[in-house]
Length: 96
Image (tube, rainbow, N blue to C red; front, side, top):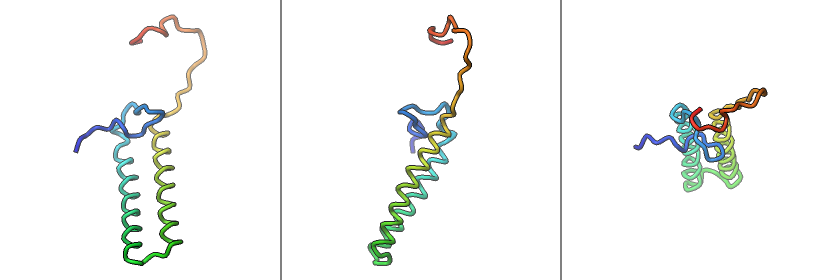
């Protein structure tokens, strides 16, 4: 298993400052979604769920994962309010 967290909590293609902090939450979201999807697939194959039940479970799972990933990415990139004031003369210089 590679410990590359560069795709955790992306917002507009950018990783958060500390993606490893949010990796366990992303893993939990993916594991819960995967478990539900596997349950639905198993239920459909065994004839346990009718169409309305399994399609509702699949739809809620997909939307839940999308919304949970969105919330995680917004939490990983907090809103920073910039102070208004005098323009900084060193604003364009790299490294400052």
